[in-house]
Length: 283
Length: 280
Image 1 (cartoon, chains in turn blue, brown):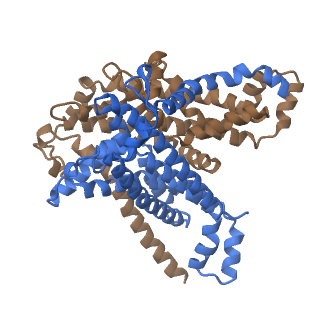
Image 2 (cartoon, each protein chain N blue to C red):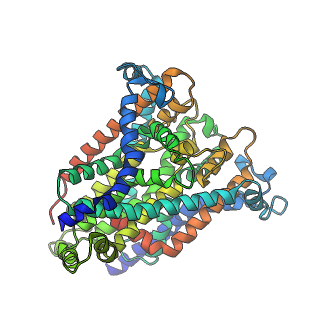
Image 3 (tube, rainbow over the protein chains, first blue to last red):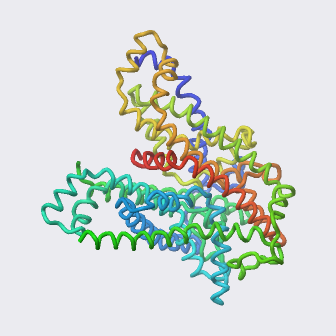
């Protein structure tokens, strides 16, 4: 069968492979190369060695956006996962209306980041003006918490669905055995349910982690980095370096930042996968 | 013991109901504001219901459709999402079948390259990708699906390959022995078995393409073509006063179809998401 299939490889592999070359492999390789160059288009690149990478560390806005992104990611990952898991526990108790609740909590997930950003901008600005506080464009604390609330609103439903699927996969006799052995609901949760849903936790933490680090649309729409780049996250910072500054040096710097950003995302997600995978139990 | 349990359950139901109302509120708020007159929309009055003198009927919606080009954007968004998802489903399932059934270093390398591409943030390739698209003339709504196929292939191939490992080889071998060529085997035997995964992949990719903002902004010529997210961002980004009324009408016109599609197909969507995550 393999031989016959190999003869047909142009049909099976070529379309995807060509598109993959155009859409990912070539731009990725070019991007890697251009991070060592000075350029305004791909055509006029001039090799400058490591100088782009050196100037990253003197770019205060990038350092700040890194810290801001980490501060955002830690809080949002914890909040989203804890709340989503709590909701999943409640919605697997056969409460009345479970389906309606599940439907409602999942819904914001389908709405795009730009639209979500503007919806919450209007809402948060209204709350701030009622409380006689400066609006989002001038209020960095509100911008930070606004982003977190927005992220929770969008992602809790999605993670909840994954946790529900995980909880439903736990065999009933396991829970029964625990209760016969005299375990309280609390002990059952910590000693039986949590270890059994570890694979779901791995996925959810991975998804929330990469989503928080890569966040762009919501950031652009809700605060746009205001006030004065304070709420600018890494992805938006890179975008601004590319497209909001005029001059020969910026695109190279932006590309170098992007390479560093890419490395950071890969390293963090590999570390996270290793850490949570090691806690998974065999069924 | 049992009675107390039902009381706590009732308390939880009340709490969850309140939470659900709060969850829906932001959307309801935009809906109410989109019915107000431009002069009545202000930062501090967003919570107020439209009153008799501020009520504008559907004027903002008429405006959004008639003069803000909403229908054109809707058309572009629909076309791009449809072509991209169809291309991804067909091409990537074929590619994934080949990779799982033909063992070898090349298949393996390709597979890991696809997985790798899922983690890479878009900012890494955004500049070079938009330049590549320009030079290959892939910068119109009619052929941007090639780029979506390329950038979306990672997730699709990964999910298809994950499922294919679990279907038995014997069925395919039998059809080959009966004289089917690989193309017939794939489309007549394998494809029907892939249906549930197709739904999962289709939903995830459609959600991504439909809501994507940055890729079309960088690739398409914004003066000629605006997808819906681009149109909404354009409202804010353009100079001068932002017309809040038509903008909120646009937001609602974007959200309402999504909600309808969701309510109709929620069983599949929720199942698809759960299944997709378990394989991921």
